[in-house]
Image (cartoon, rainbow, N blue to C red):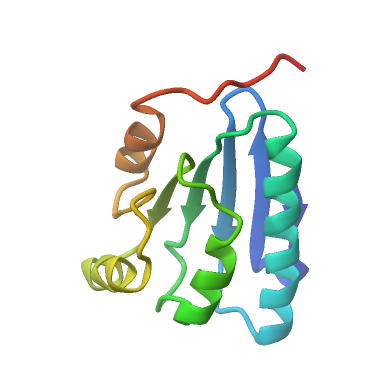
Length: 131
């Protein structure tokens, strides 16, 4: 597990489920975001060594607003079309905003963690190699 400065974020890959989980706990300054971006990219690269298709759960329930579109676009460069990304947010307003700025069919936004997990794992399970 990677923990960012002052616990602003965590990035953790579970090789058994093939799920990379990222948690945002606060607004990120440009400096903290740069560290998160690098940790997230490393997490994805490391996870792809185990499974080429990822299931990514981003828990953004502590976010009061969506990150700027440029940050979303930058992070999205790490995804491939076969990946499945579930974003959990705290309000319907953020859910609508996420739909507006994130233009990936692989990304779905949820208010409920249970709903996010259900969707994330509902279809094909990635080919997770035995470690």
